Image (tube, rainbow, N blue to C red; front, side, top):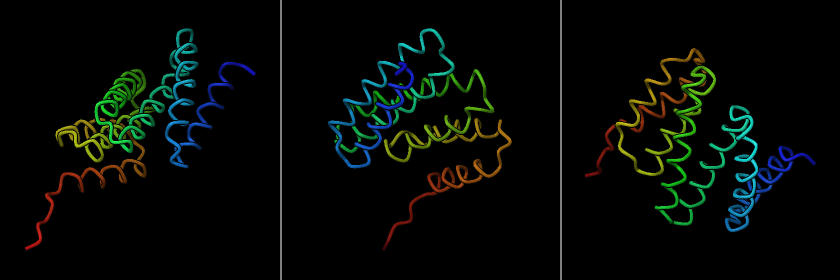
Length: 150
């Protein structure tokens, strides 16, 4: 089995464990997959950076569920960095990924809502109306002030 296939298989197993809320096992498998993808990215970064960014995002979600905000933020920031780099390389291909990551930071990690403006700016550079419309709706909901019950 090639390293790429092994990394993919480990990532898929980690996804399964995460869905089953078996977070300890998921973390182990994500980190093993991450190690392989990082090694693969040294010789061919573009082909493996998106997988690395997704693993960072998945680890952030797990640490959020485990109520470990420092680790969650660490992995989320790594995912953001990766998505920003990819978006600079090919905006049309990776803009929606970056916008999703930015929105997740506001929605789940309570990052400042100014981040949503960056997400909107990134989305304005893409012509994929269906996917963008859904994300813009999410952004609008997150921007909207919460109504208080009296």
